[in-house]
Image 1 (cartoon, rainbow, N blue to C red):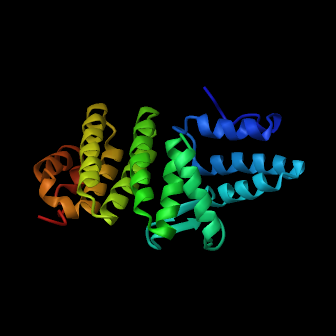
Image 2 (image 1 turned 90 degrees about the horizontal axis):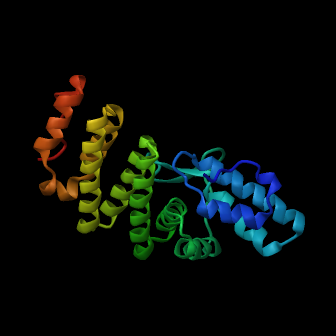
Length: 229
């Protein structure tokens, strides 16, 4: 299995190839940033200006996380930062050429937050969905639920019923699987996603099934109020 170990022993091209190919199932976002930073340092030592400029853009977005309260990506450490036209153009290029769904999802989400390009938000939604499947397989249920939530939020933001229904159906598939293996904590995350973001497709949501999951798995939440009817 590919890992981010011994990056200092690799050349920068090998590091970038590893970032593209690695399974992010049990990695966290700052590990991606760390890998890009090692590659950046090596290119700085080589004096390759074009690569330096590109990798600074990579380091910038993988040191951020989405803030629900601010409704935008903000640095994990430090003040809010803005993106210029050159950076957005680069992220569009990367979103189209990368084969790694975790990377594609981040590029597309940053683009949507700053450029509102529907082509890329749809690509981002699909990338988040594919990422969620990989996280589920790796038993990283927290990241699975988070990826599905971002997909649902983005699909809701463009009022695309087909993509919203895809997100909804995948939520219920994951709920069934988590119920069967007893992972109740993460079932709550998924139910929360459905109730928070399913308004525009509320007629398609099986509320009896939602109540059934709540009643069967969460004794202290049996009186939960469904936000729509």
